[in-house]
Image (cartoon, rainbow, N blue to C red; front, side, top):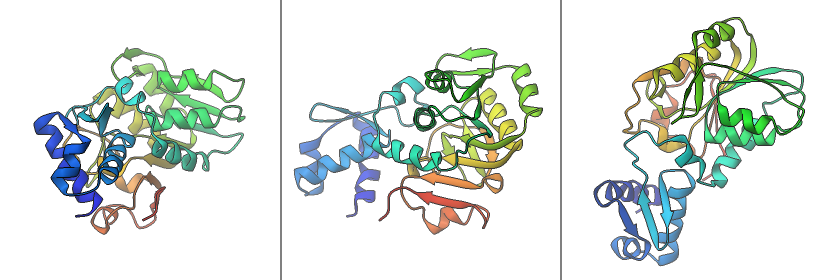
Length: 254
């Protein structure tokens, strides 16, 4: 059985049992303890579970996990994805960066770069305020405390009057026709920002493609996405949903 097959089964087991012991996983799959530990690390590093002493617990994968819960997961894979996104950042430009734990890491990486960043993310703004550059334009409005973004009609109006070089956006779910978010206000802001950008870059781990989360609100259709930065290579069935010109970049090579 491949690691991908084991991870899928482990996630199903977590839904049923909520807490799994690494030693029990080794026995269940008839694999070494070290192999089971690597499976656990893989799930945790991509934000699909929370590591505890001796094993792993469910992070309510079928629900929409709050930003602060995901933010405490120190993921080297998310860092690799952020480093890849940084390659598309250029001085003297005006870019939009949406809410995302991966994009928060991007904001850390571009500290000191002379450009303008527009964002509706509280955490992105806090990271970008640590140095003189980039210049930060934070969209105002009502604060969604759970997911830590702002929304207002004035913010939408400002986005409609702004031209971005690149819009960097995250997502909770990538379906066959677009990226989806759980909150309608967030989706509306992201959709507007993407429509005003010359290039749209989406960061999304492979487990976010067609996952069971309840995410009803379309943010960006797949045919409007120029670059997808993900962790693992995507299957042909998934890739064919994108435009032929869409660049798909996995940071982990098999």
